[in-house]
Image (cartoon, rainbow, N blue to C red; front, side):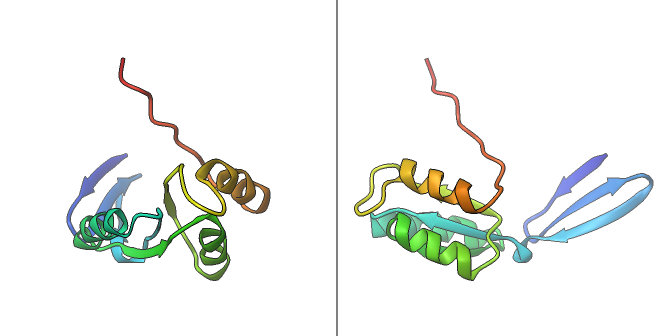
Length: 106
């Protein structure tokens, strides 16, 4: 499999044929109580052609997940009402999302 990433699409060569995945079909949910952080992340993601939804806490995030087809969640840990850890557990009760935990630098 060969993957070529461009600004507006990802092209994958698999089994002798090319598959094109447009990035504007991907939806990202940014969950953070700091509006400036939300806006900064949104700028970068929109520049890559992604659709961005924002939520200010875990409760709003769960509502957005039920309203939209979300492919990726960027989730803050320390938030009011429902923090990131509790939000993660609630999301996993409802949906099957793969997860990624970044490794801490030593």
